[in-house]
Length: 348
Image (cartoon, rainbow, N blue to C red; front, side, top):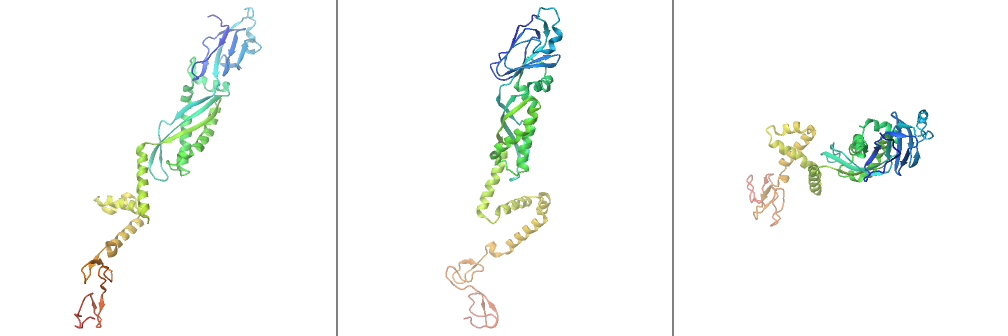
């Protein structure tokens, strides 16, 4: 194979490439190495990094590659051939790396007690600051290829990103008691928290995290409809006041029990209602049934015949006194009685 006189890589049209391995390994002393802006060249011999070359033009000699000193005695007139690998590393900034949770985060909303399936999506920016560490920690674990793209890096780090993002979101919802409907107001603080946690992981591989954004946290429409139904019911009953929403929720259980052959007792046991709550509800129901005022019972006015509340003393239609009358003999007489049936005395 012919010895290469100039080694260079002009890049790709897209910025998707991360590592480019120069296809030929046949070099010689005097070969010119050209490193473009936004690149770093790694000179690898025997699997070890011999030197790192930053943007510029270099002539390979034993001065800049001391590892080659053992080869210069070979009789090739100063053009001693040797075999080595050259890797070009893209050091430009990538600010548009997308990430997302494939599997939903399943949580119970702390405010509405509805099971939610939450997904998060966002974007991050990376820059290589230590090409040598990147090569040692990452490139050796990849299959040999002329070009390694950023997509491969995302595959390697997807697990870290998802775990850290899920952990931060779950903590915000569960520990801090933030409802899923309110968590969108916390995206900035959550983004900073996740960035701090993933930054140390990326530094281990030669990257620095320039930015990290959680752009959206969402859940399926059917989960939102459950919360929306709760909000509608609560709003309607809060207008009536007196804690009627809680009462309504309690009666929902008993309504189900009425259609169940096990009855109320079964609802209490199966529904998880406390004994005290059941007794209180039973007492409340008994009072409602036994109280004629709450049932709305009426009586007939003895004068005009209008239906008036059973406890009313005077008719609101004609003004007649419908109160009970006590005779001089002690007999209690109904309103409108003209003669006492006990003593026969005329009622005044």
